[in-house]
View 1 (tube, helix red, strand yellow):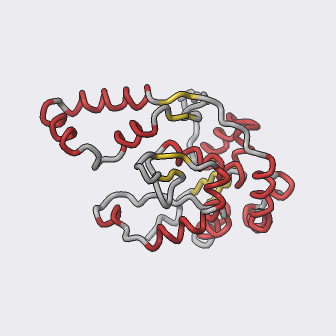
View 2: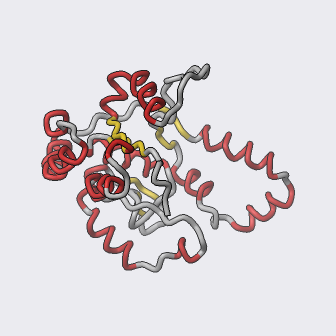
View 3: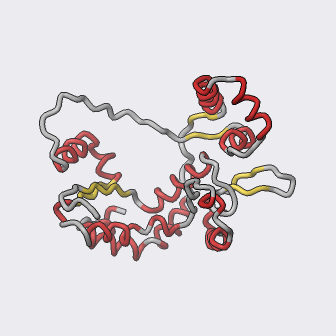
Length: 231
């Protein structure tokens, strides 16, 4: 069931840049073998894959992931995401909305639009969903900027809920939840540095653009934007 009067806003990013950003996001979250972008050595240490390595073995890693029992789902935990270029094939995803909602109820926004004039995109989005005069003053500062983990081992231990069970039990018994959360987030923040993403290698970008060329042409027709020229 759905609300036939709903307004849908779809935000898209050029596929090659999106994949590189997704890779960097995976480097931040806890996803491990075979669906993430880190692997465990034979001595238990966690090492990051390069972006190129993650792309090169994505099919093998996806097949391995799909062959495994979904232990996360069995425990009721949100399924972990898969790093694969299929996620940047937007046309099928966008078309599902267009099959249900009239075209004038679906607004497609590109990251390129936001970079060009974020205030304009904001105003047009408010108008699209029917928000009229408002006294709210939006702030367009950058948030959630690129991060680099100082210690992967510490990061993994903090985010992997079944690590160090005895210590976790003792801490829970001796400290209030509010204090634990405050210390947890403080340590998590101290274990990262904020830095600008390294540029995507030209050869890798060229390979990705060729890989997505047909997809971009299809998406251009669905989105009614000249994406072939833009991307």
